[in-house]
Image (cartoon, rainbow, N blue to C red; front, side, top):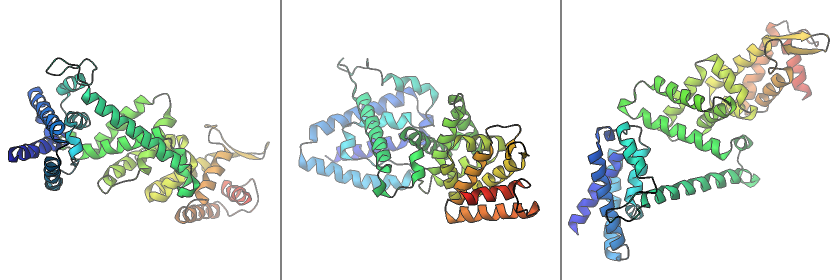
Length: 356
């Protein structure tokens, strides 16, 4: 029994390493041995799962193993006795989600997902694939249910969250997790280049729909964060604010309610967004023939759009409302502090907003 418990230590350490940057040193032979160990523990699980005494001994040992490895590996995923029953699936999922995995091992691992895989007895073996399918189904169901809860007014969820569908939320969380994981990988390179590379790939995937890409970035910034993920969010925000053109594209592709929430959460975004709206307003000219303000070069930046965006900010949290009011009043004063329509865009904005 003691030898089994010692081997269990080794299996837990193996799964922990599979999620770490040390995987970059693995070769196909190492991967093969890892899956052989995983198969061995699945057999042990099947053999002892109805044996209460052995089951308890293994579960108790896992508790102490988890505590020890949690202090060693920052991204350690705790192992339960149930996990031992599908060690190969856990190992496969850990490796495929690890950015440090050498590209040369990709074919070896993806081959395990094919329906034609066979075990050592020549029988069709789909346990790895079935485990991953089960995880995917559970995650998909949880996303749909969590989104459905947002539709229930009794939950007290803020309305802006309804503007992100489950798929977009999931993609945002995946991007955030990827950023956070890569930041921990010593071989990932400079962080700014890492973010540029990731978002460039996302933009390429969404090349025909910039609105989808913008919403994914918004989902990253609005995702619930752990303390370790806040650094990844800061990097994403820095990337967004580093280029005025991409900021404008982002703001045009994201609903106003989401932008208002971002302005509340991130003072840097609030300042940049107000500066962007200020530039839009200053680019408008008054059309005496129709008594309205128009943007000559960008028809999508129309008067109604501008008023709506300021309205959402004024209806937002107190800090956002006060910052917006202060900015508008200061701009009106600098422009002559007029009180009649058609002379200053700032005067007319304040008049239109008061009417609403």
